[in-house]
Length: 127
Image 1 (cartoon, one colour):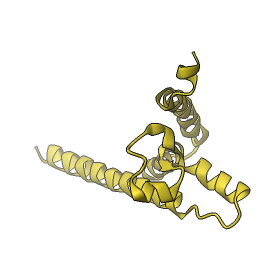
Image 2 (cartoon, rainbow, N blue to C red):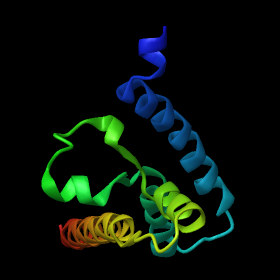
Image 3 (cartoon, helix red, strand yellow):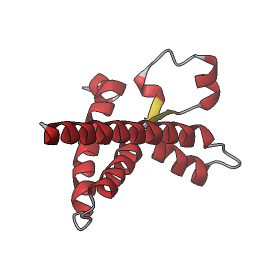
């Protein structure tokens, strides 16, 4: 039982289920927004906030010592909060960069899907 409790993969699985529930609540919290594109941007912000991982120690991540272990990562927003509150002169720029990369990826994906839907409706309306 202890090995399951301290396993990084099981902790991320529990966090993933919890984050999905929080993302559902995030989506329901903005029910009053009727514009489709603005609602999609808010969904992307929520997904980036909840689902973006960042390395716990930026120096070890740069040297490649992590070797892809999931226990060496945490949600980026938690890293920003705890480094800001608990450490003096802590750099949380790496976690912000991870979140910005996720945000850019989400916005590019949203724009490609919007372009695909626009082209699909344009060509099906002509037929």
